[in-house]
Image (tube, rainbow, N blue to C red; front, top):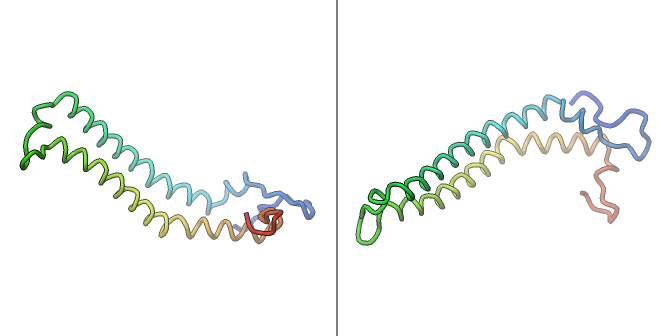
Length: 127
């Protein structure tokens, strides 16, 4: 980070200056990467969800179109809602593991080095 995320002059009870951490380039990059995935994906999923709801409400004949046996388009699109939810979740986990977690771990490491006492639980473990 280059700057000191711990308030200067603070003794053993030093507090981390999280405002300064938020201004750091690493944190800005982390926030940018997170938002560049989450916001477009949220918009996509909401559009897909509302399209399904509107089709179910206003396009009864279309949704009732048989595909094979008693399976119709409405059933398939409904099941695809679940599939897309799990797919987005898996995609986000993969994205976070590769693009977000390394930066977050580096930030945490720097903060723990600068003020280790802030991150130690009174019971003896890390917070």
